[in-house]
Image (cartoon, rainbow, N blue to C red):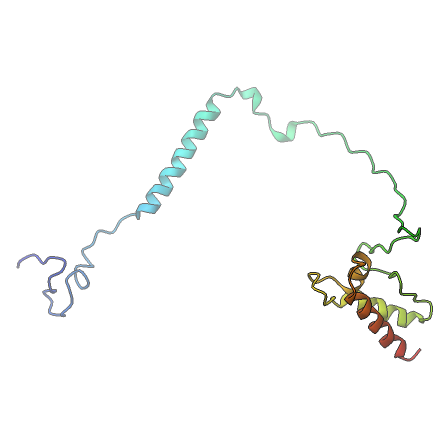
Length: 165
């Protein structure tokens, strides 16, 4: 039987080219080139590491666990809370990022549940001025030039005041 070339019709009679039919079975199966070069690179890095570490003396390769611990840092000094230009204390967020008072929004006329509801809403609703997802409270405190956040806070305050006391 004569040997078939790649682009000849397959002798089995399928009508396909030999390379797409029975020629696919005779291809060499081996390690892909990229895997060979990856393994060769890993081997080269290992050899270079071995050569570089061979020149070191054993005393310079101390364990990091045997090194003495650094001295502890001194405590931070206590600083007074910052004040606004008018002298009133600034509204700082609590550690959870929640503002408990907003400049320009007196909460004295609200009962405890209304005050809590107002603070919950201004600390959870996002400002629509385009300040990247900041809450209304954060925008009121940190962006005095924003006109949208105070209007939103005023609307929220009016809605909360309209609820029963």
